[in-house]
Image 1 (cartoon, chains in turn red, yellow):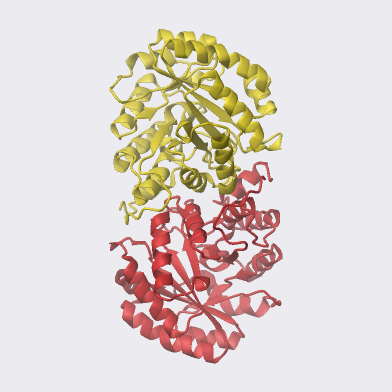
Image 2: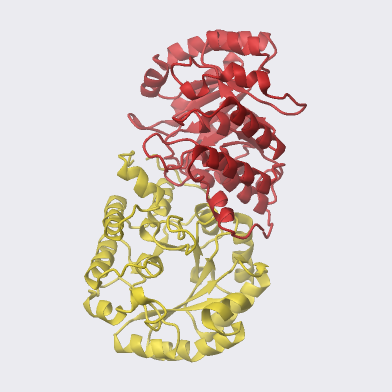
Length: 310
Length: 310
């Protein structure tokens, strides 16, 4: 691979790996705890230093992650490795604290329809619900990320105004969250919109070092939107090993930006990620074998066919 | 869709549609001439003003396009619509002239190995072969495009130095070609490399208005590389309706950048293309039905599942 930097990009990017949680949560066939633990261990060994491990939602809602405590009990903790866990409410926080977790994530929405459908609350009510979760998490010394979903478009409401996202995002930061992950949940955003949203958040006082982006590739836009976000100063990018997860509508459709496709671009741009791409690809191929179907990641597919590595 | 421009992009982009030629040429099942003609007519009706129609290579090499003259005989010609045809050599040019074609394309290589495998010649010999083709085409008033394949990486040679591409490209321009299409045939390039190559060509005296880019999505990089090319001043982008064509290694793998995914990004950026996206998507769905498998375009898939259009 010819490595050529591009002006305006950061020297280093933190990849926030979401495969084990966001990637697996929609899988119907239950992945055994041992495989989940091995998946996470292999991702960490491949150089990913932040891996969202699981979710402490009620087991009824996400059967795949009903084994969260069992998984957390066997995950090795290592210096410099963060294994955040999704926490939906105070009950989830209780479970997180009981499990000895150091980092949590809450999951909000920029739109009323998605808040109603996903959280059974208005946006304002969901923020009220998060307030004591975030406060108590911080009292206990936890690091807190907040996801904001539907930041660009919403399947029921259409275009999502930048001001709406800014209002929700700044409120979450006011609650005490450490990091905001801006989600293009349905994948409709384009680079100018990405840049505008990040610019508006910076103008509203949210430090760009506290922003992450979470793109879905449903319309093929995830990587170019990531490039725009990096140009706008963002240095944390969510991605899913092997492109796991995402679209509930079509089994083979990709949802999350594949970590491998992101790393390929960043390697070519000379942006450090600390990720060993061949080890990551092997990990995704292994998990694809466990799930019984090929990875939707283009890089995993290309390298699996014997395509050039470098 | 929220439309937000991004600094440094052109106001308008010309899409050079390659689906009927580059897209179909690897299809094993022969598409009837009437379907090919309808495909091209529908692409033109959807607003694509440059559609590469077919190839005048020896029928033995590309059986799918062995019907080139029959197709050219039935294609309607319209003011403002260009239907270039690939011409490999003087014999192909004879056929082009006999068919009343106004635009042709020749297909060169930046690397020796690909020149040997694809053209059975050295790079220097292939340029000698093109010289009389281009000269005679221009004497007859034809517009001439030159493809340069393997501009970023080569499966046998690895990294392709920028200087090698510049040498071949400037020689092709010296022969009298009107436009150069820079091909990332195996899809390994990244945005910094794209920018560097375009910059080197401009420095070597090739006007950026005479450059086009031709990206393959084998490693998921096609759209972000396109974004980098647009930032570098390129205004002509090759794409294939429905993402048709490309990889000979895996049937379902995408090869060419899908025109729909490109148009989605450009629509969101407020960059004019003249393309009616819903009409284009319908065309690609129709052709996918003819070919008996779904389009690999993410946008075609998303809209086919009922995803938001705007």
